Length: 197
Length: 249
Image (cartoon, rainbow over all chains, first blue to last red; front, side, top):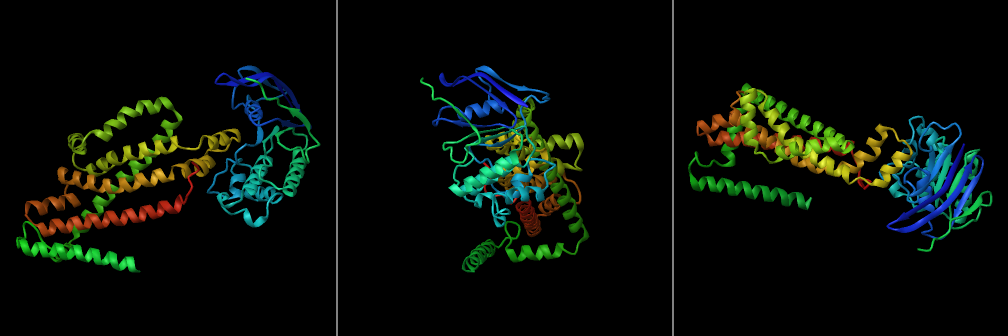
């Protein structure tokens, strides 16, 4: 499928965050949104997911797509995990078709097996982030959207996470934001400029 | 261990003060001591009517409590999902909360008679507590977590189990603690007013007209014990079913 972001503009309280931003997202491609904090990368991802409406412009889901909102595997900027539940529960809850066994298999690609049954509130920041990545990869989706997915990961786990994402991605398009491009050479860098107010 | 001994000491002190006061008054109509109360209770125990009264009141009050709790929680969920429904419910729930329980008891007596009065009263008292607290808990849920559930199309059952119930557990527990005690107080009061035979309230009323203070206090002791035990069992079950600490909010 192709997602067309067409001349999107967005402002908050009169302060412009995005202006006439366009991007075509197509299968088998990866897009790395870069830019300083506050440039509107997260806003762009939220508009892409249909969580916010642009002031101008539009997001079109092209091809034979029957849903009004894109079906996405998402890593949010914050973890957004159910704190009292284990990593396995957090991953398994996202779909009826996803068994705990499959969720565990997905998680084991990124995390040591002994921490998978602990409540996620007891996990470190980096481990929690990897649970979020596993959750996004565990369901079939039409696009992978990841907002700062490597926050809190050291260099080795970051590279491991990138490898797992790439393996799971297949032909699904990937849009992610990152401050560092280390290990992300496979994607097209898309600068999101900071706007002058 | 030390705190348990201290607790037992405090209770024993109060019982001694009660016994001393009753001896000082020396009037079994005005006040009887704990020893006479326990003796009156022991005299009640072999009577079949005591146990049937206990069973009838327990069944009615607990059913009223459970019905009030279930409908309060369910309708709060509906009000949370459907704003119009919440707006329609608001004046009704406010009326339930503010109208004196005695007015409801008398109205219910006129409408239905005395059978089922304790159930109705317990329901009327518990329902607004659970409704309002559940609604408040739902309003405090983390919007980011709700958004995550929306994006992932998380199934309703998983949403309830993993997001809603952990988020409202502390609100539910607080309102259950209050509602459990209130359901017994209001239920027995309704039985006293309604004069339904074979209930705890009727036992209290008979003790009153016979000026049998020992029996009155024995029935009161029974109400306290049964209410306390039910509260402990119910809250233990609740903590087992919803053992959440952080509440996701």
